[in-house]
Length: 316
Image 1 (cartoon, one colour):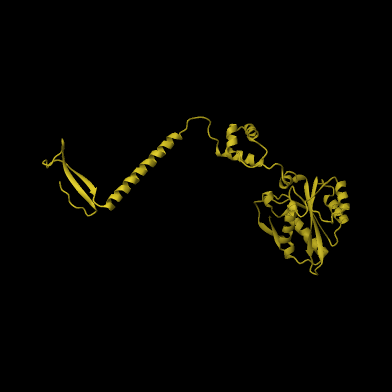
Image 2 (cartoon, rainbow, N blue to C red; image 1 turned 90 degrees about the vertical axis):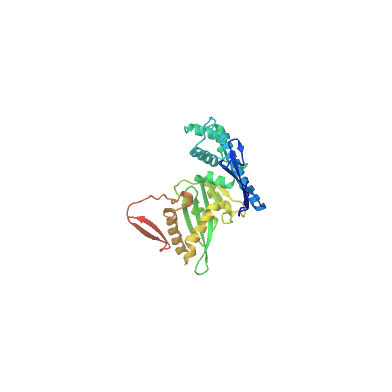
């Protein structure tokens, strides 16, 4: 047996193996070589290699076990991604619906899924005990109008008052009025002119400004409109009108010097036409309150609005 010293920290042991076992005299027998570590570093290196091989083998066995455990055993087929998305959309859009109601709608659409599948993919959320103010505005948007006033200073530091009336259904700016001395009689007259022969809204949302006096309240009731003043110091309850006032300031009044009442009335009427007919809105899927047609043919031309402050692009 030869035991030469290896330079890598291992010792090679060679033995002759005969047909009946190891033999020291048979020189023609094949040699068997065994490498043994001779230092602590070599032993640790070999131990780490064996541990990595053992870990790889365990992971492979674990994957094979779970592949066998998770194999298909028949039963109801899994719902497609489109059906799962539709279930989630229905549950979000109809928070008062449960799994049986959504399941019934899916059956009427020709989608054969189980009720337990519907319950599994519904969006779970905490339901409010009753509808809030935002839900009320969204559910009754077709019959709601908002009214609010804002202040505009002139070049001579004179204060003018603007009045707007907004329909919630299409965010249409129905009326813009201007005066230097707002009172209940003037506001009632503006409301009458805004509605005209058109259908009056069912609800009118306003703040508790003292300008809305008894004359205005009687006019609202005579027109068959339900007066809905918001809570004191809660402008967020009239959020649509407040947001529109902010848009008027950012898009127009902050960039124009107002000389007087007549000038302000002209500017606001120009902005009203641009707002209703040209300006796109996120809440309307990038459409205008007065729907605009999509034209893909023709040359694009810009139409200046408010003296070039804004532009509306058309095809001719």
